[in-house]
Amino acid sequence: MKMVATVFRVATSADVPAMEACRVGDTDAGEADWRMAAYLDGRHHPGQARAPRIGFIAVGDQRVIGYIAGHLTRRYRCDGEVQYLYVAPAHRRSGVGRALVRKLADWFLPQGAKKVCVNAADDSAAEFYRRIGAVDLKPHWLAWDDIQSIR
Image (cartoon, rainbow, N blue to C red; front, side, top):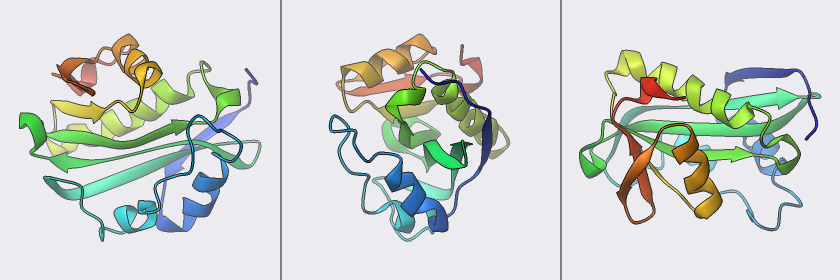
């Protein structure tokens, strides 16, 4: 794990090429969702998504090393949903993923979103979410009853 100074900021659709680039070479993760720019611009709406939405990027060594995005929702009686979360392999287990989830949690708070769900793409993603306090909701889905309780 490479430790670098990390800066977090709001993501825009202009950041999507750099977000996609941080996944290059990660054969386990594959390519980024081709709808990310449309999602950040409010032109792609996941099932039961409500406006508004937001994304954040983590920048280290002058390049994107991770990102997260989420929106308000009605899915599974939740208030919010994590749509994307990715951290480049060299930066996993460094606190970047947890910091990104915390950024999104801090955004959810003034939106009135307390219960937040996430679809875990694989077992390692589900384990990460459980480590920071999410509990199983449905197959492949986890949730925090109070997103502010992230560990």
